[in-house]
Amino acid sequence: MEGQVEHKTIAVNGINMHFVEIGQGPIVLFIHGFPECWYSWRHQMSFMAKQGYRAVAPDLRGYGDTTGAPNDDCNKFTTLDIVGDLVELLNNIAPQEEKVFVVGHDWGAVVSWALCLYRPDKVKAFVCLSVAFNPRNPVKKPLETLRKVYGDDYYVVRFQEPGVIEGEFEELGIKNVVKKFLTYRTPGPLYLKKGKPFEDASSTDELPCWLSDEDIDFYANKYQQIGFTGALNYYRSIDRNWEVTAAWTGAKIQVPVKFIVGDLDITYNAPGAKDYLHKGGFKKLVPLLEDVVVLQGVGHFIHQEKPKEINEHIYNYISKISSSKNHSNVCAIL
Image 1 (cartoon, rainbow, N blue to C red):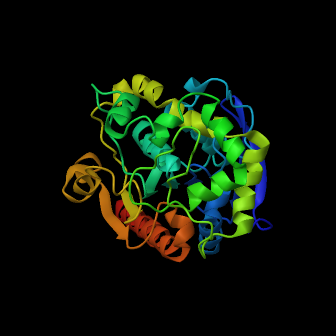
Image 2: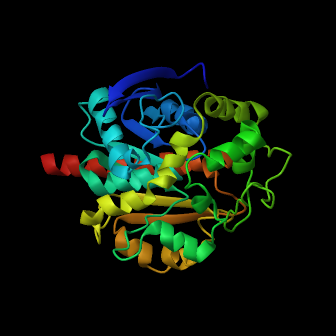
């Protein structure tokens, strides 16, 4: 896969965004999460390119080979900033395409929801993996709420103080940290004890069949070069993000969506998540939601663990959307 993709860098929104692409045709924009980079989409990109699409996957600001992000200022990592990067990227690489297909996972899903919310005019349809739309609560700040529900050892809370968790990760070893995150499969909250991260986490020393030592090395080498601060800034900006997005309180997602999650994913097993997804709450906020698919025996990194199934879901949904739009265009002409 590495030898097939084209690596490019473009100046957007004050940063130098690295992205990879493969294939020709309508764009499918793949947006990665933590602790990853464009490489997490290696299976999906090659597959979609073979189906006649142009697969594009950037390293988000603070990640991978994207440079110039103000890592010392976590307030510059709100979803408004990240969506701004992506809109500029699309305007530069595909000015002729009014809208694109979007696929996002983990923080990439959060960013994708924001893209759909702020700029629905840029999105044909969205395939969301793992993280459902989380509407803004007008009276509760996110960090305070998470601390009250899960306590001070909850991973998001532990990520907040600059330099502290980075030092612990350094002591544990970057490759080991990446491995621990990617192999974590407990269907419940992730706790990282101070000074002893992953001591109680149910990750394993033996790699699963879907993850190779070379895969771990690819991610680890990137973090070895740039550190974790840029990636952690997404978590550190959650309250600032809450502050600057007040204008979208109560707004709904007005683009077509398909949602896919593993039944062992920590997000699917969060308090109230299953009722929200399956009993109408999610559909109310995402009225064009087509389907909620739950894959059995699958964890958080669903697109790497089950690439064949995810590829088929993405392709079938995008093909369906494309066919319906083409039919509508023909009817309009007639």
